[in-house]
Picture 1 (cartoon, rainbow, N blue to C red):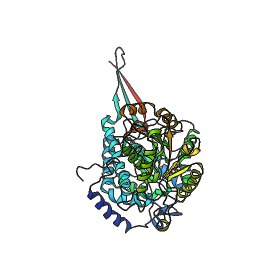
Picture 2: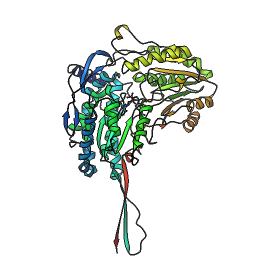
Picture 3: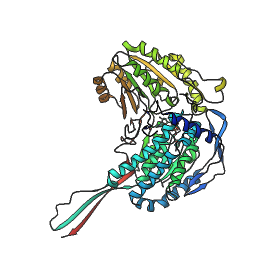
Length: 524
Ligand code: NAD
């Protein structure tokens, strides 16, 4: 694999060794399922009285791991440990923190295939998506370390005041806030825990991690990488349990100095409001939902458009914040493109996501599966299906399998043109011209990613006018998905994010630090 660099754009033609190593790791992982995993607080494994079983959405009879149902007391313990570790960690020379985090990223890469197999089993990701989630995490951490170095630890000399008979030196220094909370979603549990945690840690914060309940196991395996890299006790803490109880206790605690929340708009906005009800403002980095448009011009290469749209609508069963969920096609090419989209969608292989040829695995849980049925019912009444619309039975009955679904003839006034369904469902609409497409594209609360297919001149117009944080033109690898750190830093506008700066990008690390100016005056 020496000259192959894995990214979401290159993953469609991997070398054979990648498959072989994944298959070996999967067999080993399957042979050791069902064990109990602890929380991790102050360098120790911590067990709760209550437990929960973590089952695979591929076949809900299989228990992957037994996890701890932590409560408000565990939240308190984790925050206390993080507070205690902060003075030493924040004063550790940044070069030493960089070295430790590079070691953690190295361990993630060493364990790439075992971790990817676990991810496939827990989230239902196909093998390439799973490898991507793990490799991206290592790359996010490396990128944060590189940025720390490129900016000399964010310690910058400023100009000297023009004071007669005095020497006045000024320095700007970015310093960590303190205890940083990382709350992550189920769909990219590795990257969206490890990326924010890596950024918080390398800049000198200590962290408390709370994963989504559906993905508690894989995040514990990530925490093991931080532990094994030698991060001191209390610097990384990990608690598991319900968002509404344990998660809310963390959010409500005055011991949290900053938070990165990645998840849905509603939960994120509630967190933002809860955080504001304090004596002063603390940083809140929110990475929220999307309702991402793909616009296709009459001049587009339709084959590239169809390939990119199908990959982005149905990769990870449509459960990506960046999924292409609204397809807007200019009238002259509408019939030809919709026919091709139908054809490509019906060729997608649905099944056990650990198998080599599978593209779509199951959706995450019973609630998502039920949502699929409700949305399908609503869409069938408002319009019609070009393809899909059903859940799968027979050999699939033990898991949460849904057909990739394209809905057409749904009026633009229907709420499902606005609402993030987060399932393998996309709506397709016909537009008279690109201006109408742009108006519809921008008429949602979200502004995460967007895709375009057309001429280069049209693409420039698209970049100028679209309201989104990550934009792509003429990309068959994915119309709206497939961002990679260093190439496509990831973040959203409007209701899709709070900071206006993208993760894995040039301006991300400063979000984890506050500035201190140091003026020292000496008499000459
Ligand atoms: P979710 O909002 O249901 O849960 C996210 C996290 O919040 C979980 O860990 C959950 O346990 C926790 N939580 C729930 N209630 C809480 C509370 N009251 N206090 C504290 N924590 C609480 O989201 P999800 O279903 O896990 O993930 C899907 C959502 O995430 C989608 O909306 C998707 O678009 C979004 N997402 C955004 C990005 C991005 O980068 N912008 C990336 C991935 C996913």
